[in-house]
Length: 174
Ligand SMILES: Cc1cc2nc3c(=O)[nH]c(=O)nc-3n(C[C@H](O)[C@H](O)[C@H](O)COP(=O)(O)O)c2cc1C
Image (cartoon, rainbow, N blue to C red; front, side, top):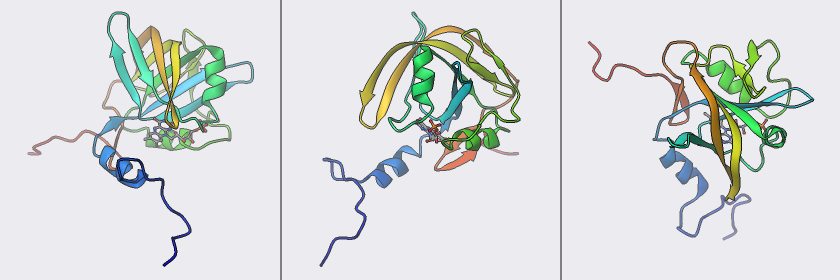
């Protein structure tokens, strides 16, 4: 019996990438847009991998894929801004989850303290300088030193859970 044409990469632990993705997808995450601005213009990508790391000093982390086409341009500026999307911004998330094209066309945004774009409608923004970057498998693990941060539009955040966009709902609806 032959092997199928496509075999998913299997880790040494004996499970494949879809299983890893499926299990990890049961952890809901926020959805953020990591932005930067170089001489050419604004750049950004959607990430679920945004976390607070340290309070003193204030550090956060994001994890762009090695294959990201936007991260290299953002990295070269030494700075980035994390925009935490609101519950009504799934379309913005989709737009920044595609490589190429002018992702900022028709979008309202302003320069943050570092120059990186702050997107209108984001519930929070966190402006950073790059503290460190290391390869972690097929992603970078980027630690950012927070320079400035603030709340944006009031409201609930956008959530990604089990492969779909979602929002907070009352756990025990009346
Ligand atoms: C909810 C959600 C979470 C994502 N999280 C990440 C992430 O943490 N890291 C990453 O590199 N890509 C993530 N992506 C995929 C990127 O947004 C996507 O690969 C995008 O095309 C990258 O754009 P770029 O090539 O312009 O960098 C996520 C996409 C979605 C919809």
